[in-house]
Image (tube, rainbow, N blue to C red; front, top):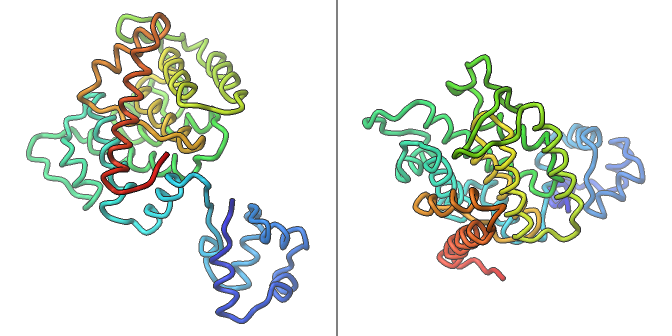
Length: 304
């Protein structure tokens, strides 16, 4: 749902009625009805209104969700609240997800980058670790912003681009940033989808997943496991996969899960054993959900 509280406030301050707005901004009756119903306006209509009122378009409206966790994240992100759920999600998920993949940054260093945009690099931290930390912050923002959207290949590829652009890998001629892998790879001794198969396998996975009427935590875990089995990118698959899981939890009103670096051996075993015994991964992700619940409880945020 779109809230036009900002528009209502501006109209009241300027003493402008809906009829005058419609006439002067050249709005159709359908556009005015959309505002009343909380429906999304076209960019063209928003620009007409903002031009007439002489304000920035982003001040007119904002997206609101019935999902209380998602809405809280958006509210705290908008005002850049320190020490809240948004702040802690950014630091804890970014640290754990990156550290599992070999980042040398500590949780305290990750927190310092998020809070101050600075870091003490006395420990010889690779530049890519710092870049990918900042990129991961922005990727979480993106997941929060577009949470309700249907999961697509374009969204998944954009997450990969956001994580890997400007890194050392991006300079390699065979490394596709924001696109599927060009070279076959093996993960933990296990064969993954060949480059010639990735697009087909990803389309099939998304088609099966998006056909579900009521997505549950089990569906999200299953998608995550099958995504990792495909391993569509040359590198960054784990982080992209966990970001997808965050987005889909927020979309479907499911409490998200944060896989802690200390649990990575259970997590990797769960992925490896998925097609023989899925309980390992399910239990690890549910434990990650408990980690998120503890964070909610610490911040006294109600949840079901």
